Image 1 (cartoon, helix red, strand yellow):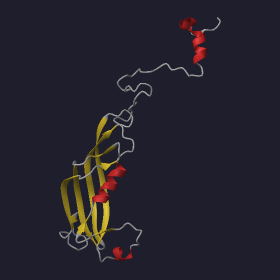
Image 2 (cartoon, rainbow, N blue to C red; image 1 turned 135 degrees about the vertical axis):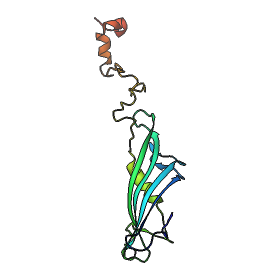
Image 3 (cartoon, rainbow, N blue to C red; image 1 turned 30 degrees about the vertical axis):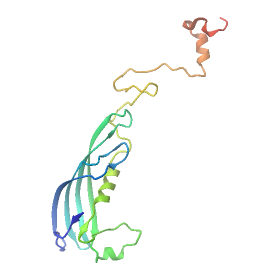
Image 4 (cartoon, rainbow, N blue to C red; image 1 turned 90 degrees about the vertical axis):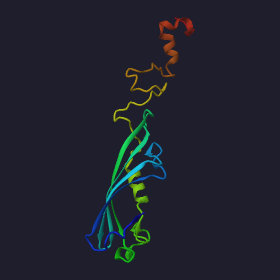
Length: 180
């Protein structure tokens, strides 16, 4: 919550604020997010306009997670730009807003940025984070990390052809059990 009493109700008046808060809860998805207790930096401008207070600026933090291909841990800087109008309780915007419209409001001379920040950060984080853009992931057969084993591979015979391979493979010997 930010107290906006320091922003005069004259259009064009503004103040700039910068501060750091710790997140009370994790922000983000399962694979990547800002952990609880991590620092979130705010660098905002609060500008008085006819209908309310316009909030613009950046919110930055470091997100932790794991690569969606190789499952290695990763860290990623997250910086989102916010622009939101918080309407005065007696403004035309507040009076004419429909119930289904999402209009942010100033309540008791305070604005609440929490949900706005959570939504902005959550939509900025990747759904499938990668440690590197060309991460090859893990071997689907044995699970070895392919970046550590560049030539890794398995000779897998299609089970439909396995019996034929046994008959044609000279090293299989008499294990094929058929006529030669």
